[in-house]
Amino acid sequence: MKPRERMLAACRGEATDRPPVWLMRQAGRYLPEYRALREKHRFWQMMRETDLALEVSLQPVRRLGVDAAILFSDILIVLDAMGVEVKYVAGGPRIKPLVRDDNDLGRLDEVDAASEFDYVERIIRALCNELHPRTAVIGFAGAPFTLASYLVEKGPARESKHLRHLAKLRPEVYDEILGRITTVVTDLLALQIEAGADIVQLFDTWAGRLSVEEYSELALPWTKKVFEGLAGTGAPRILYTRNSHAHYLQAATARAQVLSIDDSLPLAEARARLGPGMALQGNLDPARLKEGPSRIRSAVKEMIDSAGSAGYIANLGRGLTPDTPVAGVEAFVAAVKEWRS
Image (cartoon, one colour):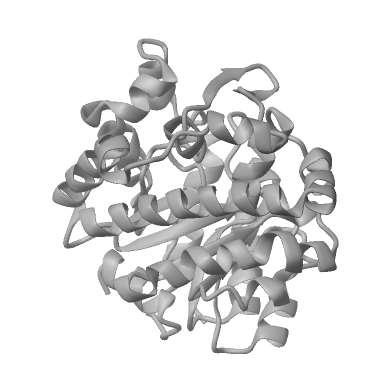
């Protein structure tokens, strides 16, 4: 099977000759060729200029031979389009202005996706022109709850304390914020699909800290709205949840075809509970990539064997970190390609 064919078949839950493989944050700071570009260009510039974003998106395809390229971008482009200032500093991005009550809602701009994300459309089209029909192209966005957490907490906040407080005391304001973000996220993903993306992934990084009840009330309904808005496009939808051990059964109801599992949950458990109808993605701990090739190979075989070869995409449980050795990433991809049942 060719890489694109393999990716799409796995998303449909079908058996493949081997699992397709790609890695979250595969285009990034662990690669020396990325760091060389980053020394010359600002991060926002690299995301917005077609030639630069295309080059970064293609780097892991050239070096690793993965089955899919993911758009080089960032989940916070949604907040940027809504008129929020996003600054990348040590310790994570910082958001200004902060939105915490209905008086702040007027600070958020209405977003025309075709206009605000025209640079995303150009990059996706260029990527598809470069890789189709052989290699799959993945578009993505942040999930509404995760983006609202950045907006209300002023940056990354694992507990989403202020957002949860807002939902309890001012549910109408919470719903307005989440509703606006949901609309923009849905439009952004639809635009990427229209531009040629084969698959889209939604990243819900911060919802994993919610209780089971909170996840059901505060995050899941908005994720469902995004996926329902994309149902007519025909493109497979992947949902990634961080700290998924508590919420994976609920997340599986969000109308995604693929559930991407982080390393907090054994794949064997997810497969046993969810059954063959839900395709899975994941979930090797990225720290394992610092081990030797033989240990990586063993870990990959165990992972694939536990997930099964039908409806499964090999990936990590979290994104690659800058200190990940390239040799470890190469060994991971090679091990997936060498796997035999």
